[in-house]
Length: 298
Image (spheres, helix red, strand yellow):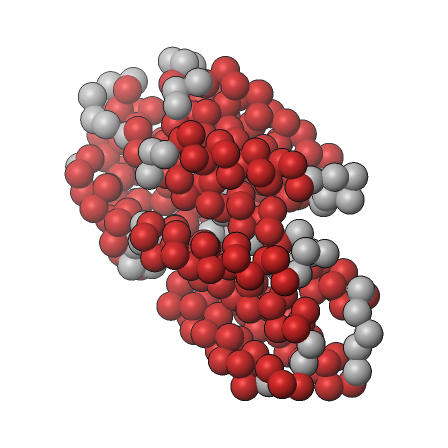
């Protein structure tokens, strides 16, 4: 049997930035006195964040990082004319998104350095949810490199920051991160509990993308337990969403996971077909780490 454990682990990495709904910017803007100049700055920053997030979602990481760099340069150039709160709020968001991209590309050392810088800067904007989000992604990163004790510590810190005002989407992302950590530790029962908690929150609040990702995760656990039919059912349901939304990062990981299930069933030809689909998509988005993983299974 081919080894697909790395791919199943990748499916659990949920490092969504939660910036595409602009709630961070809008809620932040209500908390400070805004001059016309500051309002224009916030509008510009929100637009750049939207563009960067859209590019990241399509796995156009070069373009997304270009937007992040553009935003940080803009903030530096206008630092004297905007408040410290505005400066750090958007500087952290740009760093955070860049860290997420580095994590997705497998550049763990770069991601860690960027996220630590973002975490340090969250002290300047304690009224925003950014610190909890950075901690969540740092938990994902340490889980990805096998440091699960440290990952749980960061996840626990993020949990302690949650309260009645925490957005359900953010709470769901954190539950999914914790599920990922326990999955890495082979504690599949606890992983399933947290995955189900996350799915419930996402479905109750209409977050289709996040819900699809969790459904794929649950399919992964079904596979581990030998429930191949149920695993494929969940994975194909998730795949349908990600293909329709043109999200290659998630799509390629599901192709790999589906290939693993078919291979375990002895359906090697179908498994290879899905690996080739994955390889084709990874080459398009220049996912060098993913390409190497897929090639190792062909």
